[in-house]
Length: 317
Ligand code: SER
Image (cartoon, protein in one colour):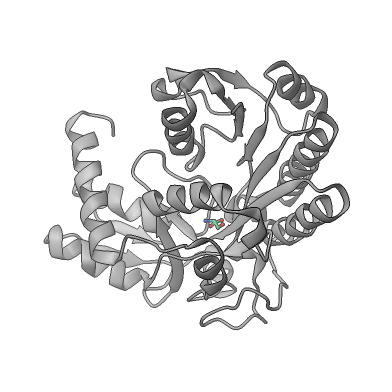
């Protein structure tokens, strides 16, 4: 299996590449990044600099490396997208269009593309948000994710391209920090706790959002990609891990880091958070391909603190 991962230097990509290399052989997984330099860990296999908005360059890479499966992770996230809506449109829409089109022309067998809880908006039910519901987002990021879902469905229906995706909640991880997302506070807070510094959170304490720990994110991605196609009722599935408020997260950390102080100064990201669901109904994923997360809040917090303390001891931050 020859695999290409775009956005490989990002939060999910930097860990997904390593898992895929473990499973399919390092030389078979081509990692591509654009802005950030690759981490030393990504040097375990091929790494290329690639801008996904450059269709000719993408076509060359897919052709030359005989790529059969693409994990297309390169994107501009929600908060960064509100600062530069034009860039979010360009990277997210042109990038996805190029990946789908190159896949169709060169016969790529499968494509994975992450959607997001950002497809939902203020009119969507906030609790147990259903798989099929109102998709009426108010952010440019959300708009690109809804249009992206429709585009993936179009390529499946019209050309039979096997595109699969997940509406990820906020992803929490210790390896690579996310950049430019609304759910970034749920990662930043851990770095401050481990450094022994207070944290100023950019959403209100009662803000509840759906989240997922990275091992569950990787498991969901691999399980969906391995699922029997006959069982898939949807191209893009709701998935969730754990929903909690910013204050509940802070308290769970404080149990393990006594004296850790958090204050709350909501900024423009509060409105984005308020437009998203609090909890997600992911029964379709559970029924169709056996989705089940492993991490609850205490287990995730325990694991995050342990991983970041080790990185801190090694002087990595
Ligand atoms: N975590 C992402 C963001 O906050 C949601 O997809 O933008």
